[in-house]
Length: 363
Image (cartoon, rainbow, N blue to C red; front, side, top):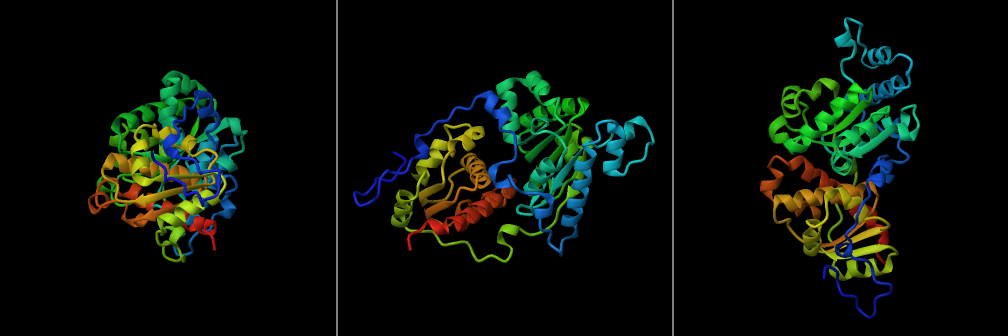
């Protein structure tokens, strides 16, 4: 169940099924894997291509480069912090003001690229800096416990948090408490936004709302707005049309280390796997193939699919699919609701991965 039956004419071995995987991830692995994902292994500030029509993008590169350079000043961190943000030494409270940057903007403006570039540019050993999504960070707290997580990350120079969530009050308060403790320990912070447009305005960082949501943690950050259109669609052709079930099945059998699942079964299986394990769920795969893609039935399922799309994109795993096109995964109510920014990001990333999969089709 969960995979399309192979025809005798199809090559062997048969592709794997994601529905047959139930990964378990040890706490030690969670800590060791807190580095930029494979897609962002080689990104740097000089590989980021700012849109000339969006000056905020070039400004972000300048600000973050200065921020990274400041993290190398271990002899006088207070002076370094003033240098990052151009602060004057008025008093102790001001001098110890924002200890991080918060990158806000729409999907596809390169926030993760910039966040990973900051991680790479920070002059510290890899074990002194950490990079992970908000979900991965909350799972680390669950695996290690709050105090052990503080001790584990408290010796780091930098913690980068991608896709900072503002839609789960419990997790948000937990992470805000954790980050406050880490800042007290001298850890610098950087985050990308995953704001709720219905509350904060489309792609807009609202300091007052953010302060209310996470109990004053916004004072730790300098908000950095990044404007622009989704680079994944900038000057590119329309998303590829869905394939036939036969095309997807044959490509899955012909591609080494591919998975093959019917979409409804996969959505049901995702409910049995914690989202923090979706990266492990796709480990070792070179392609993911779905048949019978259709509308996502409810919001909980939709949010799980968003996380899977993020992990596939991070790992540069191309996607082949039959059924409905990806821009019809989420209904109008979802796309007009509070989580619409996540859904549009998922559509954008799945569309990019569908383009990447073009070379897997037989001529």
